[in-house]
Amino acid sequence: MSVDTITKSNDVVTEDFLPLLGTDHIEFIVGNAKQSAYYYQSAWGYELLAYAGPETGVRDRTSFVLQQGKVRLVLTSAMYPDSDLAKHHNLHGDGVKVLALWVDDATKSFEETTKRGAEAVIEPTTLKDENGEVVISAIKTYGDTIHKFVERKNYNGAFLPGYQAKKSSFDIKPIGLKYVDHCVGNVELGKMNDWVKFYEDVMGFKLLITFDDEDISTEYTALMSKVVSNGNGYVKFPINEPAEGKKKSQIEEYIEFYKGGGVQHIAIATDDIVATVSELRNRGVEFLYVPDNYYDDLLDRVGKIEEDIEPLKANNILVDRDDEGYLLQIFTKPVQDRPTVFYEIIQRRGAKSFGKGNFKALFEAIEREQELRGNL
Image 1 (tube, rainbow, N blue to C red):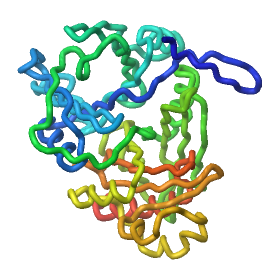
Image 2 (cartoon, rainbow, N blue to C red; image 1 turned 90 degrees about the horizontal axis):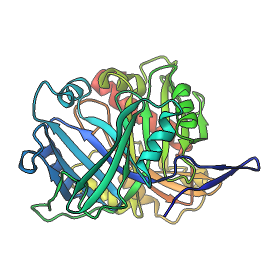
Image 3 (cartoon, rainbow, N blue to C red; image 1 turned 90 degrees about the vertical axis):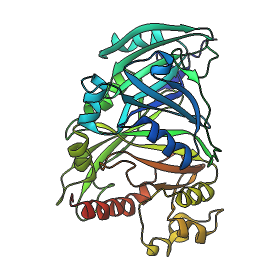
């Protein structure tokens, strides 16, 4: 079945040359995949799905595949210190290498993007095993991040050929994670518009919304952000760059420690943010702190909401409203030693936006953490 979609803009009908079915998986390069997999299973409630490594005939790496809802993470570590994977980890620390996109035709996706200027990483390649076949291809995006196109319509295995199905060795208790809402990239000063143009020209995305340094600023720091989205809205990528401020912004801190552009945070949707965040806190996951006075005039700012304020306040959950409805959101502290990648937990009650009304409180919270690290 073809998933080509038709989009209408200014009464001109155009074919979506890169139809996306959603996010296939997100691959982290980490220092110790076995221990990282334990963290995501025990703290975040991901089920172990598949494994690749020396036991499966893969000699240069180990990879653990985890899943909860439609969110699929791959945690990969290098086996040899002189490999490209090891060099990637030595430079960047734990972080996202692959934002994989689920497509109906990985060959066409590769051809359409490379002919529009994308730099090729993996030519269309067919992987086979007893469960069928998967076609993959890949192109470069910001920093050392790549987009992998995954065509799996002729495959019924656990993940990909080369991986064997594997189950968690202890009881896993999911926390209600549903799907990837959006992934945010940080890029160097002056590079945001270049990468927005890349997504528009090379991948056919549309500019969804722009935030300037008036929207995202505090007394000390500022940043700018633009959000691009594919035709059906399944894939959304905000792109951030630093803006001039009195002190070092969170984007500058990220780029200093990640050594270049990369994925800053992954926003994951839930249907019950209070339950999800309460359980994450019980399991030791740390979140940014927003002062209690944020909640003093909350209903005046956002209007009527279905949730009681006290559980939101107890869990430090933020609320914002747009023309479509409202959303609830919260941000973890970085989930590795370097102050780089973190997570957002988000529950949408109609809102299509990204919490503009919370930006000041959020970035002041980040600044407090930067100051503790001596990086503000």
